[in-house]
Image 1 (cartoon, helix red, strand yellow):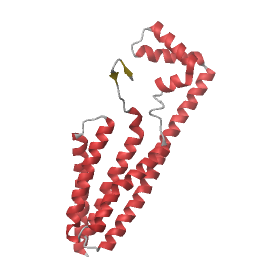
Image 2: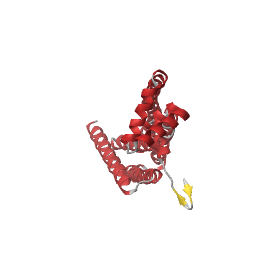
Image 3: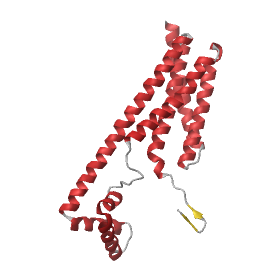
Image 4: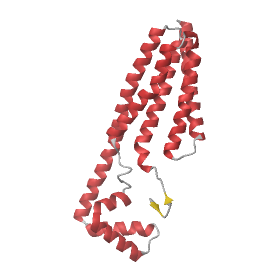
Length: 232
């Protein structure tokens, strides 16, 4: 909103796809780099490492897309069910629904007469929309979008996994492990920074959070791979 030089930028409309995109990219970076490190630490050759990396990228992207679609579809189903209930109640007992909306506004500090007038006008304009927004907290900005979430998650998983795969193909074998670790940590730090800026938050905490957990995952996977390689 902008008036007399005053401009406000809100980011609530980004919540759905931003969460899926950050989750997908983070998982792509961490899981693919960790798998490559684990296979490399076991003493496997470059061909086996690349096969594992490609399999991780494809399987991970499809898994993220399916998981996001199913989970967000469940949210969408719940929203549709709530809206159907509200639609029936508005048709069967509109007076009760008017009282309910009035009570919601009064609970938020609006004077009784004003609350009644606002509820009456909003229900005359769009009764279902008013109850969806103020009673159910369902709006156009926050409504579940399964397909968008699935596409964002899968695409960002692949984007996050790609650098680890490219490095596995081009780095000398002696530099593979340190190169993968350094690149993954840099990618995670960049992801935390970009995600924080896109969401309007301070970046330092998200950067520290994603790099810490990513480093821990890679360290554990590499340690397990080294143990397996030693045992074999």
